[in-house]
Image 1 (cartoon, rainbow, N blue to C red):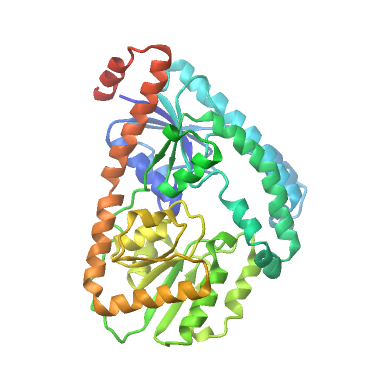
Image 2: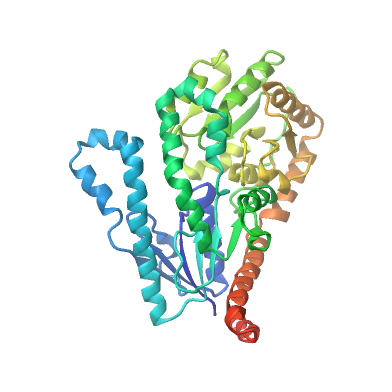
Length: 434
């Protein structure tokens, strides 16, 4: 039986990476893999896995003591402001270094009693290396995803948010990037969500043989088509679902949608997502010239997401530099077509009949693609829904994804063992079959 030390972002009733990571752990446990999950109950506690015969939660010492100490002397009203200032960013990076040391020492202590076969990080690049244990990082993005697009979109950020947020971003990544480059030395293998991401990581300097591609698994029972009659003349709703950062290109969508509304009025746009660090971008919604054709809310209960997607005609994700778009995968599971940008890695797991790609990040290109998907739905809605669902089943089924993951786990262990003992493959095969 394989024994794995694990750390990462895991939450059952959550979207995106943390929800997918829960599915990953749950399936590994069903297959008999022993998982010791390290975390803080106050921060990252997968309660639904507690009690599983192959799962153990290792509660770490108090997290981010400095952060808490500083906030104790500040009024509550200033906590959020402090987190967004340069002082908060510096303090967060310092606290992260302390948390990394706590994690490393905890894994080393547990491994000294009963050795682990490997260390698996979910949702981040391994911030530590524990002895000579093979280490795998299943990261949620490429090492340098955000900063190049922040620089590219500086004009928009300054226009809607002012210079201070942009300068804060710049200072934060000046501090973070050297630490990230150092962290990349801690892993033997890296898993990313698309071939697009893989090429970005190789260009960043990672070895080709070390970077593997796996899509995130989806719950095909939770996200499934809702049979309903599609009427050619009914209102068609585009859905944006997910956080709103500069790279996600809300500005592009609003310009393209305004162009589309000049040609047809049977369309609507729902935007559900929070403005984390660039709240000024909400101006794009508040000042939109056709307010009756748009709805916005900052969040939605996870349990309501399947029905929301099923009720819409198209899920749209105009992001640049997207590793893997979970809302896109969920839409395909529900039989809903998607509109994607050229640098969205999720396009690799789609087919042209249900995924409509705009190659140029311009309002006109996106508008034309939005019109194209609507025309296709008018002509063959059932065929599109079936193709979308079949595409999801081929790519995102939990069992298929974890089959591939197990192969990567075994490869990492074999590579580590052979570094010290070329005959170790036999023992590895015996361990995996027991």
